[in-house]
Image 1 (cartoon, rainbow, N blue to C red):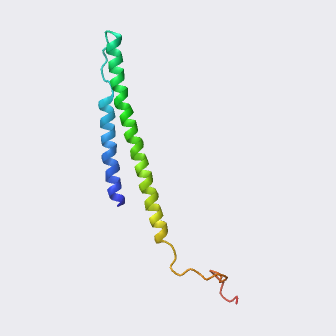
Image 2 (image 1 turned 180 degrees about the vertical axis):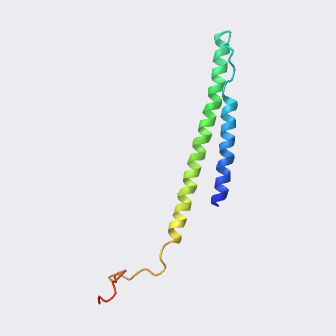
Length: 96
């Protein structure tokens, strides 16, 4: 399960980097008018906002899965025979 999560994390990281690079404006030409500048800025910010929300959603999913795995692991480590009430869990040898 942990290896699968590592593979999914890697794939997501590659996806979000590619998406963000695609959303960036890589042009060095200055727009000729303000309407063109506004459209360029609006398109770039819209795509970057989507990338940020996708990343936030992924972090929330990873957090939920991590808590779920941690709670499963904690339940599996509970001792089977719990000491009865009043009985000490450990007594040093020779002290009765």
